[in-house]
Length: 298
Image (cartoon, rainbow, N blue to C red; front, side):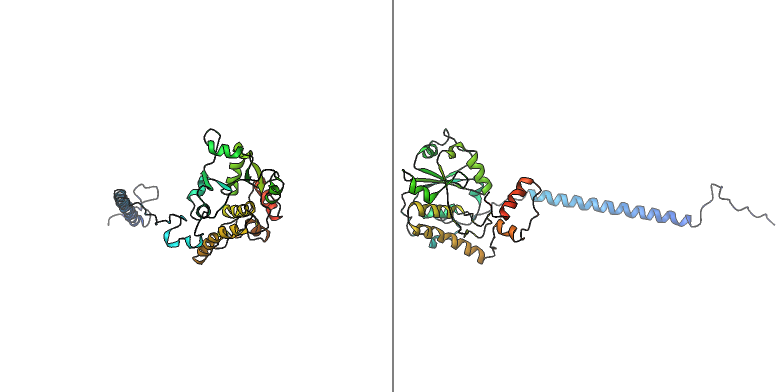
């Protein structure tokens, strides 16, 4: 009888753990599957890149703008000319609009409606942020005239209605800055040219009718509304204000009928706890918010 072979001990290098012969094929199979999936992903990525490269070779079709009305500058399908005066209003005051470049591209701007209601020689629009005597001789000469006013609120601004009663020279020209309040502030204070005319402001508690755009306070008005109020005072004709506001009312009504929301002022939202954004951490901005909530002019 042959002697039994001694069982291999754990120290024997040839010894295998139980089940070792099965685990090795499983590991090799898993490794093979991983390699196959990586290869498939690489092929998919190459295919995506190839398709993306093909997109770059496609011709780009320029976007066609909707035809615009030559008078009100609105798309022809939503033209507001029926709400404009048949003929431009007859006024003696010359109006200069200093428009921030960012306002020129906005769809719901009010200056084109204002210009459509007035004679071309009485309503002039100057676009830019910085103006100087060397670059704009015409505007420089206008700012130096004693009969020129600039409409901008502030501690140094006189009430327009009171000023025209006391002024020895009746105003013939008024300048209005068109832009957001921060843009208007930047234009006014960084252009020494606009500190030459007499600074005036409107004393009114009427809320803005430009309800599709948020205003800082309840008393803030759009450029068209400011011009309408100022011209009606200077021309002593309330019909001017009614006529100029008609296309603005029609614009807001149309937008609301087609999904636009009525935008309450930031002051109203803050005072009633409805402001959707978190309060700023910047102390200066936070102070402005507090002043708005307390109805203090800033």
